[in-house]
Image 1 (cartoon, rainbow, N blue to C red):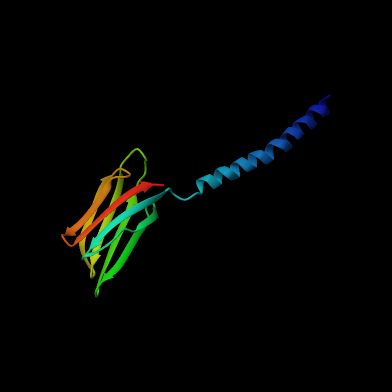
Image 2: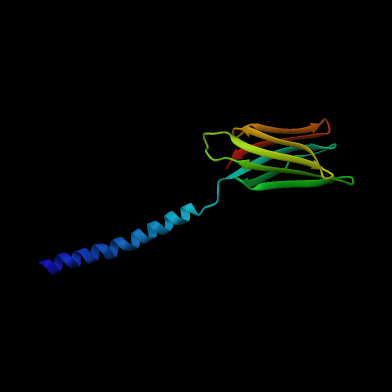
Length: 132
């Protein structure tokens, strides 16, 4: 009687252990997934040139878009910090023209709200950030 209960226990362990290992592996893989991505729709009106690019960025990653207007280089950098979906995002932006920082802003916005970075009438940037 005792040997049958021991072999039943072995059988249950042999069936249970592989599923437990699989669950632990899948749980570890779920934690290793990247941070949630954001879709950033931009409206750039810089020095008389307009464009509407879209970028996908990750939380905490610094994104950069740059270009040239004639012989003048410009660069837009932004970083999104967002720790809790119930709280507003922090968006750090910096606009540089010819190596001079012309605008640097930190905004607290909810997903879908517009972030505006304006240096003057010739430099206007709008960002709309959505969680993908």
